[in-house]
Image 1 (spheres, one colour):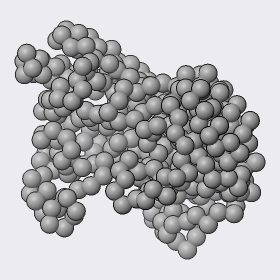
Image 2 (cartoon, helix red, strand yellow; image 1 turned 180 degrees about the horizontal axis):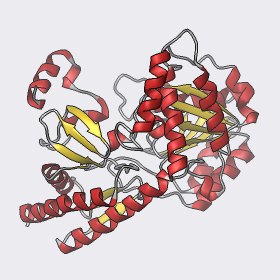
Image 3 (cartoon, helix red, strand yellow; image 1 turned 90 degrees about the horizontal axis):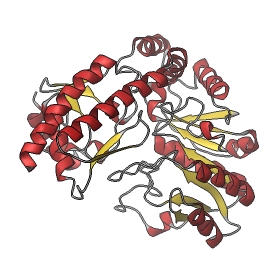
Image 4 (cartoon, one colour; image 1 turned 90 degrees about the vertical axis):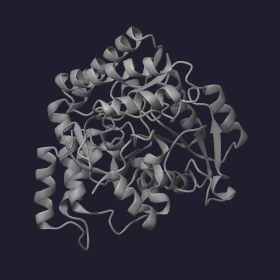
Length: 404
């Protein structure tokens, strides 16, 4: 079955044929919609085309597709049971591992998606403080529930009424936002770096991170780090740990289980009582297979220095792309951590150059994205990046020939 045939069939039974961030209709025509399999740092679409994968399933795959240690742990648990009348022992083991790994974690609660985790973290903050308002950076992505989805379709104004916006990396803006709702701030929620789509990524300024921590303390509010996208690719202990900033609550998902569906909230002892008061649950939240995969993933990253491997591969990719762009006469911006990179073309306001280049990369076996950050995995070797750079170099050449 070809990609084109599957798209035609999907149009009859799925609204629009596809929806959400995986909708390939939003990309250049060459982007595949349906995939057949993955192995290591490669994916194959249903038409049989092979790609070196720099999206890693939009972040969940951190060790490489079908990692043997993770697959073995998942299979061992599946042979015992997955969705049972209650959680398996693996839930306690995974919670213990998170508490041992993350300095700001005294407890853990589990769910399925990043949106579950960010929503649950704010529920804990509101339960603990008895307040309603949440300070959130303008344009930040925290999930797809009505309170945070980028699209207003199907939502009501009331679902956004308790959000107060500030400008990322501006302490002045953050403090001004807090002053507008003085006495009613339940939480400050912030991503570890600014990773909004369609914009160059922006690393956090250490002074902003420390100032956000100090402001939350002064307000008696919870500092919530949304580590859904960045977690386990910057620092296993938490993405702001290198700055000496520890949150009250952290939301995790994506890379947590190397592609198996799971999310978590970790928090401090001070918020344990509030967390106990929540009624927040789901029929599949306690499935044991994903928990076994998560435990194996975190342990493998720890034991093999997986983040260091990603940093080396990401640095090689970044340096190679800079050299290629310059040689073909392009000015590019490469932003974000090297483990979560993105490339944009200077002056490309309508993304026409990025769309053409990313489509050309696909034709040469390299899967990247024109307006969303990419993801490295521990499976990307020096040889893989070298091979990918051969494809991106050809793509730069074709893009220069097309635009003149």
